[in-house]
Amino acid sequence: MASLTVPPVLTSPRDDATQLHHAFKGFGCDAEAVINIVAYRDATQRALIQQEYRAMFSADLRKKLASELSGDLEAAVLLWMHDPAVRDAVILTEALKGNCLEVATEVICSRTPSQIHLFKQAYYSMNKVDLKHDIEKHASGDHEKLLVAYISTSRHEGFEVDMHMVEADEMALYKAGEKKMGTDEKTFIRIFSERSSAHLAAINSAYRKKHKKSLKKAVKSETSGKFELALLTILRVAENPAKYFAKELQKAMKGFGTDEKKLTRLIVTRSEIDMQYIKAEYHKIYKKSLNDVVRSEISGNYRTFLLSLLGPIH
Image (tube, rainbow, N blue to C red):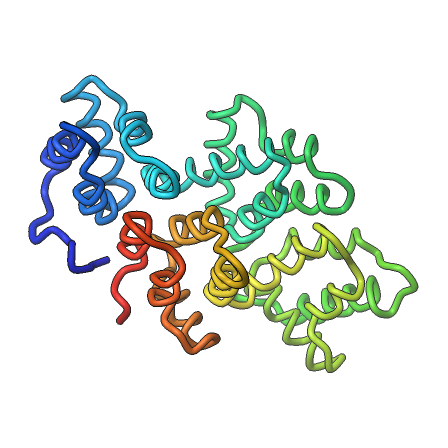
């Protein structure tokens, strides 16, 4: 990641902790100095800075940032300072407590099996209760069953696909949906929660060839509500995760006003994973640079911080 404000020399966690301490001194906080350090440090470096800060100043850096910053910038920086698995656990905790099931669905259904394994552990450490328990408490019906199955099933993460199994699954989904009066939701839940992303993408391709209609359209006509949202999220991410996130970023910014919470969540959580691919997909779909659109939607230090995470345009 780079921008005009990137420090010329990468300093040590101890130096960073000292610089942050200086940024907090005096009247008001030097937010630019804070951004110039934390936005350009990876998860390991951020963890080391926090350790050094505690050792040197006997204070919690996250608490200090919370007291010195405010508004959207504060929310974005605090989310960024977490380790990725803890961050997902924090987002899920807040989403489930606030009954914001769309956000919980986005996080659960867009993560890889290894990421899910890690955030489940973080969730338990944080809340002393299993994520499964809280999903069952807050979600309901087929949506709840799918989310529980999705976090409980061990899925293959490779790209190899068994075409005989793909054909069998494609037929099973057709029989469970379009061919049937009503829908056999259990079959959808089983296949969507047990199969790898590569396998689901292959099912979608086989479905389109055979029935001249995408599996996404079948899901839309056969299911509804949050269950439909979860199935579509799994399918879209299986096909092209970068395209899925590019479209979600557009949703966060289109219309009257920007959904800053969603914008922050998407940029902060994808910045160290696949942001360059997301930016490329965004440009391909909307014929605009994601950086330029973000720049036009928000302002101040919050804008500086998110643009720093997005990295250069090229």
